[in-house]
Length: 147
Image (cartoon, rainbow, N blue to C red; front, side):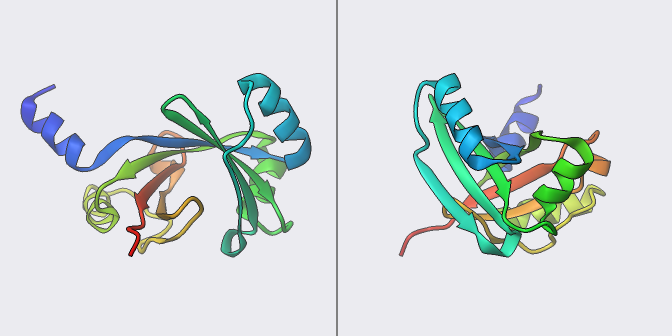
């Protein structure tokens, strides 16, 4: 990879922020993942606008987000109905979500959200449609600065 490409990547997608896993039952899944990771979640948080409960694990430098639908019309409920439980998305940390959305749109990617919205874990979020990313739902995340 050229130095220019490396520099561009550092300015856009910085790292995998988390991996999102759709689960049908949070209580059962928390028991399972507590045993698997040998730890407990560091945070649970409802995201009412998305009709989900989120459960976050910190595993070394990595985060795993469990997503449980709170409404049959939620994206997570529809995902589980169609594909079953499992990996739902990969989220990437970005420095400037507005600039990254603009860049991706200019590159021809289909954006699910053209404007970021507030998500869980103190983040602005937006998604790139999986039809343009080999079937992988990509989430962009930017930390919301504290005042």
